[in-house]
Figure 1 (cartoon, rainbow, N blue to C red):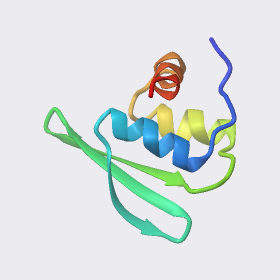
Figure 2: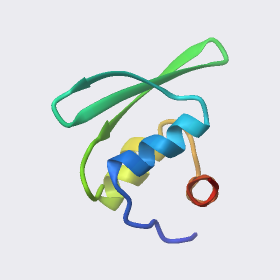
Figure 3: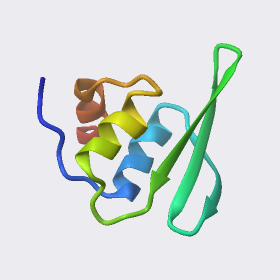
Figure 4: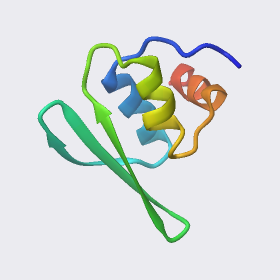
Length: 79
């Protein structure tokens, strides 16, 4: 399994927008994104921090969607 890079909240949001997430609201430094997929609504909260902790990225953002680390890295590299 590849290592997770250090990324900012803005970079994570750019990746999530590529797969259909849209910003719904923001409360403080936390941004709520959602998308409709197969009759369900997926909601993710992304902290708008300079560096997101690797555990937060893996378990709080990628795992619930589900998005693998490899898929995340390929979306991150793609412009």
